[in-house]
Length: 127
Image 1 (cartoon, rainbow, N blue to C red):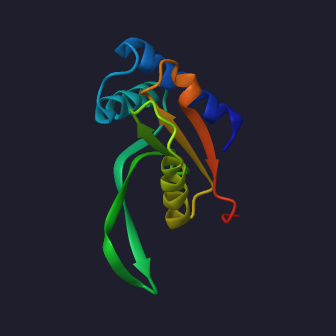
Image 2 (cartoon, helix red, strand yellow; image 1 turned 180 degrees about the vertical axis):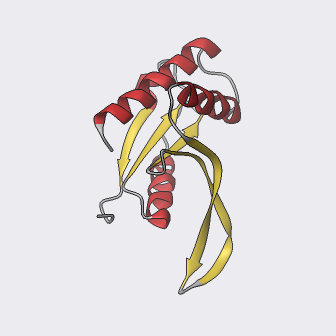
C-alpha cells in the first residue's frame, strides 16, 4: 500500500473519531461514517464484502464479511473496543490471505486517541 493511501485512511479515521466525539459508539457507526468520509475524499469503498471460504474448490462454510474494501486493494477492519486483542490482527491477516491481498488496516475507534489504534497489517505470502 502506498503511503499516500495509508495517510488518507488515517486522516479520515481521525476526522470520524473527532466529529463523532471519540470512543463509545458501535462499530457499525464508525464503519458507516468512515466509508462516507473516504468517499468524500474520492476513494472507492465497498462495505461488508463477502469472502468465500473454500477448500479444494468447494465452499466449506458460509462466507466471511470484511468491513471495508478500499480501492479494490486494501482491506480495512473496523473495531470499537479500545483493547488490543491479537485476534483482530489475525482476523485481518486471514481476510488478506483468503482474498490474496497484500495490505490491510486495522482501526480501533474505541481508543481515546484513534491514532494509537491504527495498525498496518501485511500479508507476506502475497506477491
